[in-house]
Length: 515
Ligand code: KIV
Ligand code: ZN
Image (cartoon, rainbow, N blue to C red; front, side):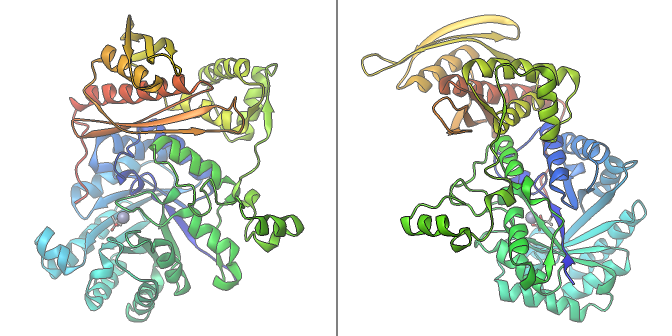
């Protein structure tokens, strides 16, 4: 019989710990809704105690997103567990996920706790969480560098205290597949009450082994995998959801296991996460990279034309790729847009629909054909809007082989029009220098990435930038048929986020560290 492996998505928590990947509450809610469409079993919506923003995100997702169980992370501390419950209470399907380290390296050098003290804290906090909810998960952090006998002792104690999932964390991505698989086997053999809990695994990718380790654990009986979209996460990231899920789907007979994931939603989810976090996916990334289904060699192309099975182990359609349908044109009305949006899984308010419709009309003037991806881009931009201190009014850029690139830009700055002109090394540089002069920003541009959303020279170009100021990194995103305009929008989007963050900073929005 095929076992169903639970998919615990931690894109919004561990994924957000990727440098620069911070998301605002609206963005998190949007991703959570897409994760629900993807059919993940559990969404770790955040770490409620860590900041007011995370608290709000956990609360809103728990109340607004239907389908998956919504979890909040909590250190093994009373204030964390209580805050997780505060954010989750009243919502239909919730979990508290508490954790403490079990490795001597962490206990001795970081927490200054003895093994006995850590075990006691773990048990007390699981009991405290069980006082609030049935569904409690416990993670022994750095489990793979912990003494096995002590680890098994802790697991037995937390299960006896009421943990229903125990999550074996390879926190520093140190494990090797056969070793990790054998750790899971040992836990099954040596923890007497292990049948009362689901064994979960949480693998980091420091040695590029997170997917392999997760799969080795499944082979040895793990029933839940913690993972993230595009494999984002702390340092080298976490096991990538799409890799784990598509391996199980493609080789389900070998594993005797599968997941409930609607794999056709994978590409869309990957794009959304990439857009919102600004973490572009490498072209050769398994499953979701731009080249994942591109066959370049003549021999391969010849084989594929004769029979797809020759070089294709899964179809692009199975991950929702290649369904770039022409969905709307210049003469489509508001009703058609609403219907298409519903088909794509979006429920917009009347106000959001109006804004998206206006954008769609403008785009239709610039571009004959509008594809599903274009509509997603527009909607994502509309839904993730934050208050805008800077609004682009006009932009004119001169460039070419015989002229010095010069940009003339007019912005509304807190409602007041300001215009400026600057020269640069190229048209984007000129535009950015002009915007920097108007906004007087002290931020540093860390990265600038351009990509085309759909094919053709009239494609919507999307630009993602990353800015840093006072230790805060933000991502900006802009899309337009004119790449210079898209660049200006992306820069302004990031500057607006920084401005918004500064207004919030006064209200204590800085996050506490994980430990
Ligand atoms: O990597 C880790 O150990 C974690 C825990 C909080 C589960 O993210
Ligand atoms: Zn982690």
